Image (cartoon, rainbow, N blue to C red; front, top):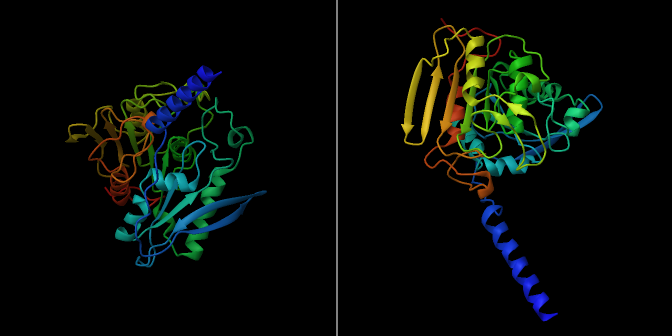
Length: 322
């Protein structure tokens, strides 16, 4: 009996150590900001949808609006931590409003046929949710509806792809992190065929969303079907704007970051940050995500790169300047 107890203690201790190493990731304290995070809800159809938002004290008369979408099974608090609260810091510095919508039962109604969570199976109107929030913030905070942007992590990025495909005039730009377009046999959306400004930020060693395409699973569970490669994803959006397959510019800001850009006068910008060795996370210097999600790309701040991309995009519904 004593031997069994000792073995049980050892096994439990081993599991505790494995959890602490691979899954434990204490959240940092939020930074000191000019204002406080607010919470509200809005009726969309028959559903009462929740969201959090941050309005900086100093902002222009008609500030831009940025949506930040969480990943699968996450909450608004989770994505704030996963991004290191960097979007709120940037909001203070750059004068835009940040909104964190909450997914239906912690998921989004994206374009993946294989997805079996309630947001998909019940066909939740997430597009209507985002559109309603754009209208509400224009009315309540005087945000510029033609300067509304959306970035999403993982499944949040997949909802961004849906909006980019089906309602490209709703947003002035979309940035997807740790996400790639579904393959044709896994695509449940109908593309408008219209160009849109899109940024993709993917790690080459992502354990969930394969950089070179393939099946998306949550460590062998929760099959989400197959996705295109990161290169094919940006090539698709570049093609909508009439770009050739070859990027118009390529840079390597650091040894582990490669930036490819499609940009020309009169066309929407499309870009890819390929993070060598990067995992399934939002790289930034504040928060260390659980190790099981892979490697954080040191020296690369994804929120800063995302906002820099958005800041140079034309207004929604207007063609880029020739």
